Length: 126
Image 1 (cartoon, rainbow, N blue to C red):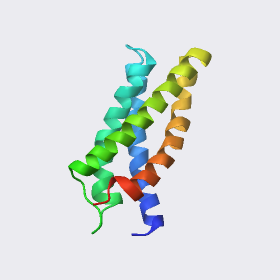
Image 2: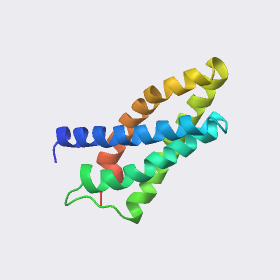
Image 3: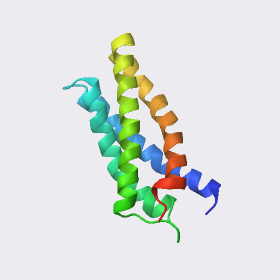
Image 4: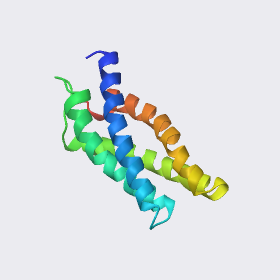
């Protein structure tokens, strides 16, 4: 599979994940603090992203979507969720909730770049 094809599919699926993630986070911040709302949004997006990226983006003879890949994905997801939640909390405390809501796309875009490299070269490999 070509880098361009992987990047296009990862971007499109990532946009769908991001919309779900951001929408859930914004909705939840009406009732709960931003940190747990951010985790809730990331869980919602991750459920869809793991499956779609494994079956569409990185599908090939040398890849799989199984228990080993899920464990790797969870390591990456947990790490990026900690970073994302710390960033959202810090922005909320320093600048306010509106800025945290607006900053979420930029934070997730940066973390998405890390996720792409790890997904392509580690997570989905057999």
